[in-house]
Length: 332
Ligand code: AMP
Ligand code: MG
Image (cartoon, rainbow, N blue to C red; front, side, top):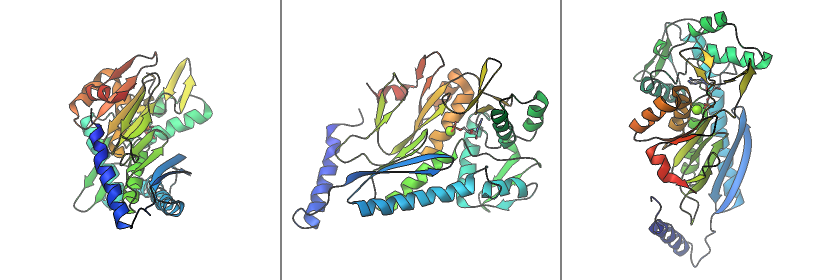
């Protein structure tokens, strides 16, 4: 097991040092604080350990402000976001973009290549079509799906690290970072907290969680996963869940997920719930979306080849599949 009792020793020693430095035990032991704000179309929850309420308030403000900046850059719900501007302005010519957006596009491209395009950040034309379909409660016309598909494809998005630019091959393309941005935002919120001296925190963006050091005196953050499986106890990592419980369209006896199969242009109908652990939220978030598309067999085969990932997939009928590492982490 990764969390032997000896792991408490550095914590105790650190506490002792803090007590000595502040002179005869006046150090305030960190306490747990929690705050919730609406960002990225969902409720974001941050839990952190801080010495007092004022320090916690400052930390929450800085972390949520960073999330708000990322939301403004990465959303495809606003024409004014950097992501939407790129979709309009980078057709056939390189456009210089922020480091944030570049990192998201770079991570997206990597996972697209690894999964033969199961994850694809250029699916905007399709995700927008299906968003409208959910609103009107009607499956899109096959012709509309075909037309949208023709404007998608991660190979039509080109990145240049040196100049930090992006270029799109054809008009009508639209990027949608909905499958990766929340995990990235959770990572970045943790990074802000770390810089402020908060070393034990958890950021939850609905299904996308990232966390730093273990709560004082514990082996890790306790992360509930799909019943009846149990929970994980982890620190310095991320856990993302994609799945059936989220937005969908019920029509003709089928349930179409908000996750799109890039090969068909249709919402997924397999009804999988996919939980992925990784070192970073950006990777866990994208991987959980990708595995949903790949399905049980191809998805698990891919995960087993990735040293940094572990996954649990639950099928609609309750059958579960856990990757080799994931099994080791489940606490009953
Ligand atoms: P998640 O909840 O992280 O699985 O992300 C789902 C969201 O990602 C959807 O609401 C879309 O915005 C976007 N999306 C849908 N299908 C895909 C896909 N195949 N690859 C990448 N992003 C997708
Ligand atoms: Mg995701």
